[in-house]
Length: 324
Ligand code: TXA
Ligand code: MG
Image (cartoon, rainbow, N blue to C red; front, side):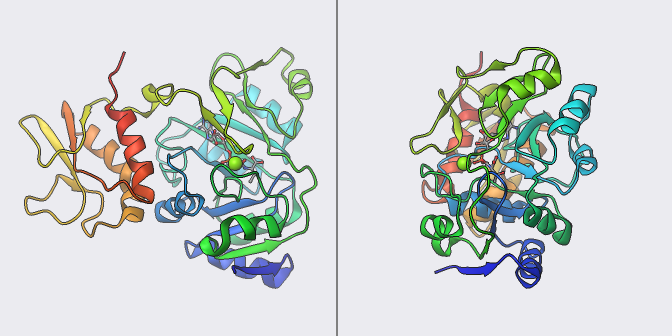
């Protein structure tokens, strides 16, 4: 059984210490329990995907203690400020343009140029954010494909020992996930219905909001939205260079992304020891680095199709998919 502590000052201190040390802490928010990790720590974020047993790198929501902290990681706009003033702290997640050169892990947004951010209203969640001094990446604290947890017991049943600590703050007040809206384009688009009703959002932005049911569908069991077509987000996921998979070595004009001990040594290596968690933590930063060399093609070593390897391979297959 995982450790469960009540949401009091001792529990919060221990939770904040674990977050700073790269651990996984499940904590209550006003919507559902989140599975939290330091959003600036690649390895800690990789552990989230491992614990959820996700077969892909769905981007995660970053939680911050205050609205002003949000603009350190995401570009602001008049519209974003208006929505923030109206709904934060609260059950609204905004997908915003991601600032470059932030401390945020690239894995948090799965290599996308945007980042999903929320300032939660739950007192305990806010205390944890303040005490840890870190932005916290947190998907719902359930295994992939299961329903979202609204009590500490749900989390324990679903995640077991995969989580270092569960903070028990009782049942969640709202009980459904946050509403997610994409604020990166010309029009605001709702990506997932949730705790904040569409009508309230429309009133705040003064125009009607499109619901992107064509782009997202609920996973079985009511878990997070997932793209209907795996290729749908491929343009976002793809580096500029073409990608060749299962390559034993680089050919002329290619740079090599290695994995595990190799004699030749790659240009960069996801994990010289063959550790899939380390590989997941390095994946997006290394793809960016190889892309920045200006090479036409990236050849990638075979990655085992187990554990986090499934998510890594899913991402790499998208990157290697034929482009329009
Ligand atoms: O209420 C909630 O939102 C809870 C609590 C813990 O805050 N969190 C939550 O996270 O439901 P999660 O990971 O289960 O759902 C977040 C979803 C992802 O599955 C993804 O579809 C979407 O948010 N998302 C995250 N970043 C995105 C981005 N940059 N662009 C588009 N969608 C994004
Ligand atoms: Mg979820």
